Length: 354
Ligand SMILES: NC(=O)C1=CN([C@@H]2O[C@H](COP(=O)(O)OP(=O)(O)OC[C@H]3O[C@@H](n4cnc5c(N)ncnc54)[C@H](OP(=O)(O)O)[C@@H]3O)[C@@H](O)[C@H]2O)C=CC1
Ligand SMILES: O=C(CO)COP(=O)(O)O
Image 1 (cartoon, rainbow, N blue to C red):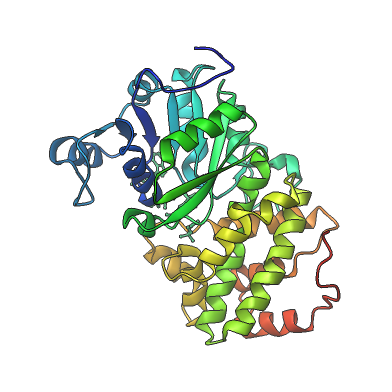
Image 2: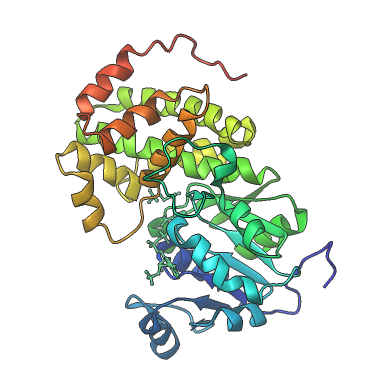
């Protein structure tokens, strides 16, 4: 394959790694254009897809099949969509690495961060982190594999709405134009618009950072506060995302685009958002442990708050929403006290980023 262009023109199937909520939603969209092979780690999931053409009991098209083997997926497909939460991302990427070649293209949809810490340490033991110790998923793929053409999918894409066929849009970000074009070709439909962006780090960070604000928005709703308070949170949250995104290597433009403000508005308003739900349930009196133990799906924002708090410890930057949410989640600060602190915080300039 020509290293400068990429097109699945020989109609190889498209690989989807992960059969969770988002992996399933993306596999269904891809199956409208091409054959799809899903990699899942559970034999029962693979068996269900291959034998009854269902996933979690819901019918799926017959051009979707499944495998338990990374090798099989890498041999069959040139383009792989990695749809794995950040907690499993490094492990899964390492299991695929021996079978990946520079001709492969990977587009991921993960809205979380991984860590690059010395052996024997983790998030519970390292409380100050430099940027070099924090990795976006494109950085994990670059570190662990020989794949260079990497893309990221981010935007207001609640999987439940996508599966219902409701209209939506996303951003495919990559430094390689052919990755953006192929993502657009495969995913675009009359119900789904796909924008391109070359700032992959900024787009990844937008999807990651909005989860923090979504937890806070759920908490406001759980406290019974109104739309004025939400407008305030979303606006100040966006400013915080811009400064954090910038400090971590992303561009302001990406945060004020679909993957940033677009996704922020969606997840701060939806009971289908897991992050929003975490905040809502906290405000209703449940503990973080109770909520996490009871959730079947991942709420990336919880881990992200911890990582960003550790990053703030090693920088001059202040991010009052994140810092107060950290105290609520991990230091038992009552949500009402956090809110009071934020109301008194000396934010004096409305727009300080342009
Ligand atoms: N759901 C949504 O609306 C959206 C989600 N995202 C992002 O997509 C990512 C995935 O989310 P989502 O699909 O919702 O998560 P889910 O919790 O629904 O599913 C996660 C999937 O990843 C698999 N998995 C986890 N760890 C491993 C591992 N080590 N090896 C193999 N498989 C593994 C799980 O497998 P198993 O079933 O075997 O446990 C499961 O199928 C997250 O980062 C999320 O932020 C982005 C946009 C929208
Ligand atoms: O990112 C999402 C929608 O764009 C999904 O948000 P949650 O992970 O909070 O469910």
